[in-house]
Amino acid sequence: MYNENSKLMKKRKIALSKIQKIIKDTLSKEEMKFIPGKSTIPLMVPDISWQEINEAMDSMMKTEFTMGRKVRRFEENYAKFIGTNDGIMVNSGSSANLLALSVLTNPRKKDPIEAGTEIICPAIGWSTTFFPMVNTGLVPVYVDIDLGTYNINTDKAEAAISDKTSAIMPVHLNGNPCQMDRICEIADKHDLYLIEDTCEAHGSDFKGKKTGSFGDIGTFSFYISHHLTTIEGGMFVTSNDEIAEIAKNLRAFGWIRDMKSKKEIANQYQELDERFLFYNLGFNLRPTEIAGSFGLQQLKKINANIKTRRANAKYWLSRLKQFEDFLILPEATKGANHVWQVFPMTVKPDAPFSKNEIVNYLKEKGVETRPLQSGNMVDHPSAKLYKHRTHDNLPNARLASKNGFFFGNFPQMTKEMRQYIAETISEFISLKSKR
Image 1 (spheres, one colour):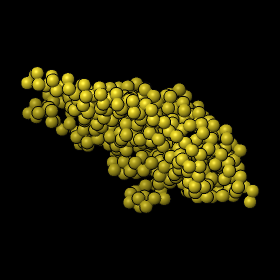
Image 2 (tube, rainbow, N blue to C red):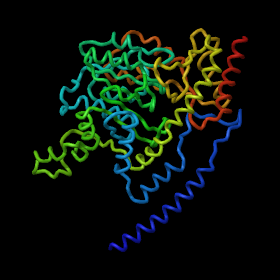
Image 3 (tube, rainbow, N blue to C red):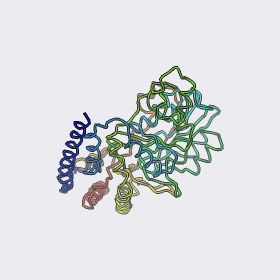
Image 4 (cartoon, rainbow, N blue to C red):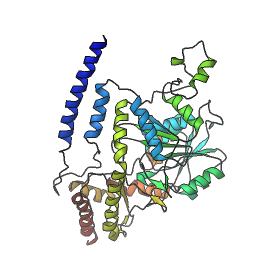
C-alpha cells in the first residue's frame, strides 16, 4: 500500500511539473492589446498570471481543496501586511462584514452590541456593507458624504450619534482612506465600536498606518476587481484576542477547531467529541485552499499594482483639471495614501451636459463606466424592508448617486489606454461647451 501511494504521488508530481510549465509558457506570452476606437476599455482586468494558477494547481494535484495550510499562511502574511495580530480569511468581503457584526453582537462576547441599537455609516457604499447590520438586528443610520473624497462626512457622523448608537462603520470608498484620526476620536469620545470597511482599499494608509488596522475590526474583499484577488474571498482582521477567537468560532459552524482555547473548552465538555463540539452559533464562511493559493501570490505584487494605479490617477487628475467647472474630480483625503481602485467623478448640476450624455459618449467610444457603487442606499426599494434612520437630507450622497460615475483603473492599463480615456472626455466636453 505504501509503495502504491508513493508511486501515485510521484506520478502526480511529474504531471504537475508538466502542467505548470505549459501554464507558465502560455500565460507569460499573453499581452493586452489596445486599438483606439475599436478596443473596449473594461471596468477591470484581473491581474492574474501563471504564478497564481500554478500555486492553485499544486493544491489541486495534492487534493487539498478546503481551508488548510495555504489559507493559514496567507492569513498570517496578510495580517502582517496590514499590521494586525490576526487575519481570518472568509469566502467574500460581504461575509467578512457579516462576521464582523455577528461577532460584536454575539452573546459569547463581553459587552456585546445590543439588538436594536444604531450603527453610523455613510449613505454610499456597497449593499453588503449595510445589509449585515440588518441581519444582526442593528439599525443603519445613513450619513452624508464629502464630495471629492466620497467618504463619510465626519462632522455629520458625530452629529448623527444618539443615545442608541453603539458603533460606527466608515467605508474607505474607491481606495480612499477616511479621515481616521477624527473617526477614532469620535469612536473613543462616544465609546463606540469601530469597524472599518476596507473592501476597496487594500494597502492604503492614513498618516503611515494601514487602513483596516485602526478599528476593532477591519474587513477586506478579494473579489476579482480589487487590488488583490482570490477570485472570491475576503479577510477579517483584528488585534483584539477576544474578537479573533469568536470570529474563528463563528466562521466555521460554531465549532471549536480553530480556536486557541479549544482544549480548555473541550475539558469542560468531556462527554462530547472535541472534533465536533459546537460552542457557538455559526456559519460556513470558510474559503477554499485555491483562494489561499491565489492570495499568497497576489500579495507579492500588491505594491506594484498600487503604484501603477496611483500613476494612472495622477495622469487623469492632471489632464482633467481643466474641466473642474463641469466635473467634481476625486481627491485624496488629506494625510492619506489613496490606492485608486477606480477613478470616480461627478457631473456638476450646472454643467452643459448630463451624466447620461457623458457616459453614453464614453460607451460609444469603447470606455466602460458604472454608477458609484450602490449609490445612495436610502433610495433603493430595499430600504423599505428594514428599519433605518437618515441624518439630514443627504444632499451630497444624492448628487453623487444621480450624477456620479467611474471608469476602470487596473495595472494592465497602458499609457495609450489612459491617454485615450482622457482625450475622449476632453473631446466630449469640448463639443458640449461650444454649444
